[in-house]
Image 1 (cartoon, rainbow, N blue to C red):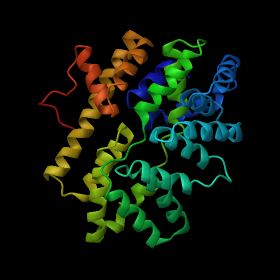
Image 2: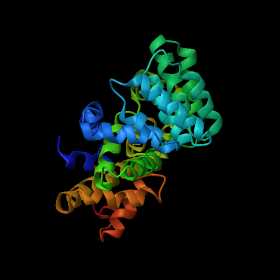
Image 3: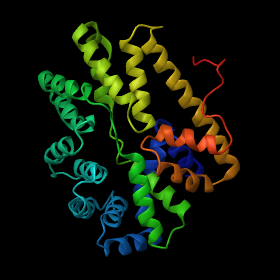
Amino acid sequence: MGRMLLVRFVMGAVVLFAGVAHAQEESAYSDPRMRRVVATLEKRSDADSLAAAGALRLGPNQEKSLVLMAKASALAPDRADLLWLHLQVCRAAPPCDPQPLEQRLRVLDPPNGAGWLGALARASTAQDDQARDAALLAISRAERMDLYWSVLVKHLAGALTSAKALNPSEAGVAVIGVLSARVIPPFVTVSKACNGERLEHPDVVEVCRGVAQAFQHGDTYITEMLGTNIAKRVWPAGSAQWQAADQARHVYEYRSRLISQLGATQGPGVVVTLLTFYERNRREQDAQGAFLTASGKSPDPPAAASAE
């Protein structure tokens, strides 16, 4: 696994490199140096260190990871990002029940629709149409679909760096690899709920338009791109909404390609530089745009270009 693949991942190539990042997650704790880092972080009493240790213990250490995440979120009860990470660890560590954590997230961060993803997935698995539609409606009324990606990368990478066993670039790559496999849930149930024959019903189309908008306002490229895909299904081709979604995808493809080129020439230091922009921007998209501007590159594709 090349480091550049993970650099490209944090630049937004989530779909292409999630599998590579998952491999990083599975092997992280098997690295003796990483185990020493985790041992150091586990002895600390701050939320970020405990959360970083819990995240790095994922895989064969789910029970211990869950204990650490519970401590971290209890130490910082107002941190929605840590609650979200705790929730993802809980989902991966049965018999932990994620529903109380989902409810807490809805209360702590009401504009975020992420607290309804679990309910939607469970309803879809159970083929409970009424529960599925209720969860989808709740997501459609949300302002955004945030996964707290930037803030988690910032805080957990900082905790790893403070352990003084990893430099900032190594810490950033390690955190990106672990979080990519944990904080980004599968969105297949959302996509299926807003696709195919279901869109023959006007009420479903209207709900899915709200879902598309929430995802397009999300904090990661993967949420935004799913939002654009749904938007292009539920709005007429050529409409203002369809064109805006098409342009958003074109911008994503342009920026991902350009930043990958910068990474190829500048090396791992790009991760460290980009992390500074993550500290200032909630959305991955905005962080990348600011990074490109600071690098002397236009964050927007040439006006004459058009997406396919």
